[in-house]
Image (tube, rainbow, N blue to C red; front, side, top):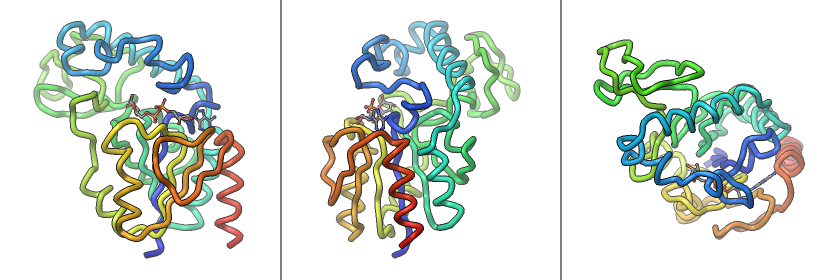
Length: 227
Ligand code: APR
């Protein structure tokens, strides 16, 4: 058991200017998640949902990875067994140089055909009547996992949690399952657990280091690589 499994949340992208969800002024205080992040909301008003993700796609396009994203990429280059699982749908981990990132809530820059399951790189602006490039149906949606839908890669994530030596949660409130339960799976399988967050979250960890990700994550990575 040598591998490190890292789970990131919106907090790692906060200092890149992308909003979190549940902090003061977070996305869920501006938008009704029922309307923009559920299959029912999409069925009711696809134009509103596309507008929500078009705005987030433009935001993410204009953002840059921060020192925390870059530190995790450095860690992966030195420790090839390090897996990054993210709840985030932005591409800042990849743009910082990380590889093999598992986006359990999907990706903002990917599109999905609800009729045939085809996936492709999303255009900057998506609209309800965009035709699917494979089947032509006009049921295209962001390739994002909404509330009530199954997160992606769960079997792979479960297997890696059960084999991890260390589980680290970064910038996540621990409010949304199944991600919030990863620390319990890892601990039960014998891993040490660490939380890096602006403030202690709802999760139970062996240790918590409080502070902004852009400071706390590089400091932790330097420690691991010096060890
Ligand atoms: N550095 C580190 N942590 C931070 C920072 C920062 N600069 N700013 C905020 N945080 C922490 C907050 O303390 C909080 O614990 O980031 C977390 C943000 O919590 P949420 O807004 O709930 O985001 P997240 O945990 O990623 O939400 C999980 O909920 O709505 C769904 O699909 C959505 O993936 C999202 C999921």
